[in-house]
Image (cartoon, rainbow, N blue to C red; front, side, top):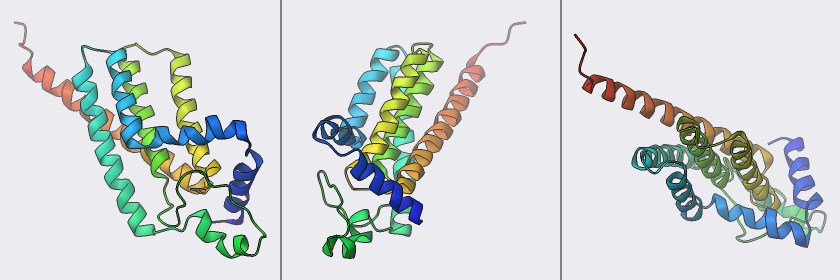
Length: 199
């Protein structure tokens, strides 16, 4: 963790703080909870392509599982302190104030699980939507905006440093992309293996 990491955290945590921003930045963090984010993603998959729903659902389930396992292994290995722990002595001395919404968290900061979940879902939705041509450019932009907003919300809520959020986004996006690519290749080979050659 660098001084820049701390400065950016405080700039976002303090600089954006207001009653209005609590409503849309603060509460956006709930979309990064798996028990909210994944059911929403399932509904979107149904709307995008009903015929390929189960195939797309498989992509989402595998990406969520792989990303979740990787996330927890890294969290336990790094065991990084959260902002409330890092700034504890300064908070006690009245030198620093950390705006906290929801739970007060102290450890396992790196990487951000909410951001990893958000980017996992975003990657799968963009992949499946692009494959079926059911999603337009503005739709990709909206999905990306929500994923980034969730990442910002984790700093706004006092739960993570910028490096945690960036790492969570990279982990979620890259692991989901690899899962989508690998499963799509496997499905293509399986279907081509069933085809009857024309003589």
